[in-house]
Length: 333
Image (cartoon, rainbow, N blue to C red; front, side, top):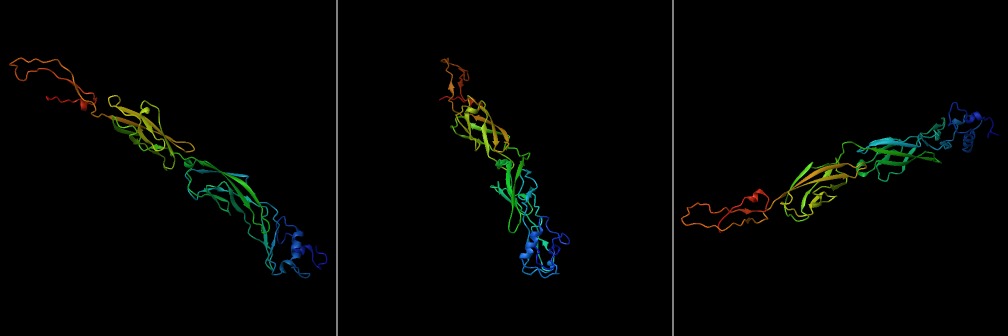
């Protein structure tokens, strides 16, 4: 309102876009009232931009628009086994209030201050895997990621962007989805393709036969072991967590000399990896059977029988099947 202001016109309030450009939504009534309320107008004939009181340093524009993400949702693909500092992607936004404030210096035209948006992760980052640059919107991995071990192949973050209005701030939200791609050649494998074990017959039940072990490249998965069905399965027990193989029966070499066991291992990855191995158990014979003579008929010897004459052939039987124990020695007692 310029009524009563001698010599002032709307042009002298600096409203025309030339030579000074204001934000497109800044209306003349807003500018005029700000100038008048600040009591910075001087007498007729002076340019108001050159006659500001030194105490009036800045003029705040109206914060008319809410900052807007360039997409309602963002999707990124992250390779498994990525390390801290890996750039996941860029979350971007814009604000139509391109110039949020005007700096006013006595004797100079108003100059727009630097405009900024502030980005924040609102939720979905409880495990702390991600960090968001508050100024640039760059999303980074904050710590080493092994999705196969943690079963985290999908993340969803809620993020916000807030403008920098001095008297009023506005905020909007978007979702960020991160999918983790699996990495090849991280297969589970046993420490040995096969195990050859010797075990004495009649060993007590629960005797430890061996311990099988399987792991992945980073040895950070939980592995479950299983004894696969087979002829020897009823005679053994396998701890599914430790891989310790024990006997569940006493073995007799004369009845069974070998056992072949098939064992599997499976990790707890999102897509489980499986490995197999074979355990060959050889039962070692012990001298547990007393040899027995085969009865023979009475032997009659006539007088004057020469020395060295064969009188009878003694035989004996040893129940130990091992050839070592089948070598018998005979003697007179």
